[in-house]
Image (cartoon, rainbow, N blue to C red):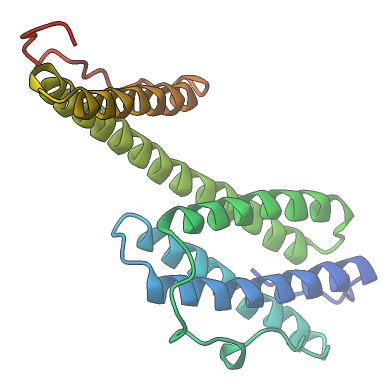
Length: 216
């Protein structure tokens, strides 16, 4: 990565590397906390990937600065982290944070590349850009899997309520079940539209496994 060169770092390179170091040191703390709290077997590997990327960025930037006898930024460290604190977020937040990292990375590295002069620094930010794209690919894959799962769950819940609603004797109970069916239908529509807009096939399950005993 760090090709031999006698060219000194420019002010633009120093400033961008410094900012990247600070951002990644903060990300390391957040991602370590997320790993401590997140138990979802689909989400954990993506958090681990993002953590590894941020830690590598810090090592690479440290190498650049050491080579130039330039002071290492005093970023965030484990002293700023308390993994024993309460769980603050739902699972979906971790995906939101990771997607934010991807978006931030694309913006930062895309802006940085045209103003970099040294080839080793250009190579570094090209790698950072590719890692951001890979992070997005992994996060998107999980989101699609979760959307698929939620659609299936809503189809199942709708079918269950439809069956019960056909035989419910209490009009109040029947009304509540109908509300539940309507909520499931709306959720299915919203989740399906999020897949359709990206030309992703929508799972088609339907109500074929519900026997029509009477009009609900």
